[in-house]
Image (cartoon, rainbow, N blue to C red; front, side, top):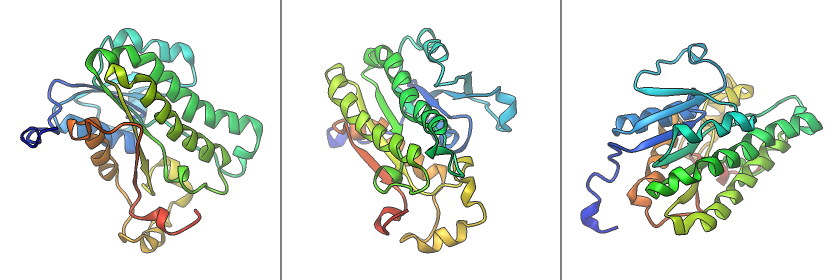
Length: 246
């Protein structure tokens, strides 16, 4: 990208963006960031929009269950073309549930298989515009979470899936990258509720993350600024992975 092209590189005016899992948490923050930069943004959630307690003004809400192939297939006619796909959808189970077959399968089905299904379904739409995919993996792709085997396995699997898709679809102009969030208070980190101050005190940057922190990296990877970047993952963790085991 020529230096003269830096101006307006984060202007997404007229771009079509889909954020799966954009109904809440990090995904909602990412969706709002794209809206602020002029994009036409759709978000998905597993429930009806009214149940989330968010204002979805300026967003197109789609009810989607990525573990249901029919639900994912219904995305194709809605998006004949697409500039950016961000997969923020994901789940985690606590209290040892991921060590049981049903719990392990459920987490992998959503976090890995479901994301692959969405990517494959929308690949033709992304090819029309030479679009970008950004899949949210996690710090656990670098340092496994000892109590969450399925979440850890699904996220390292997603990181390598990004590499395969980057190779497979690169000639179509599709770039595929990942962002690995650190500790950001959401429903997925509910087991750490009330422990935020202690976590922040341990981090090199001295604070916990926000959805806006993650959104900044996603916007970069989806923009022309990252036009020669594919198959990579950026950790946005405040230095968490510098500290050792999770």
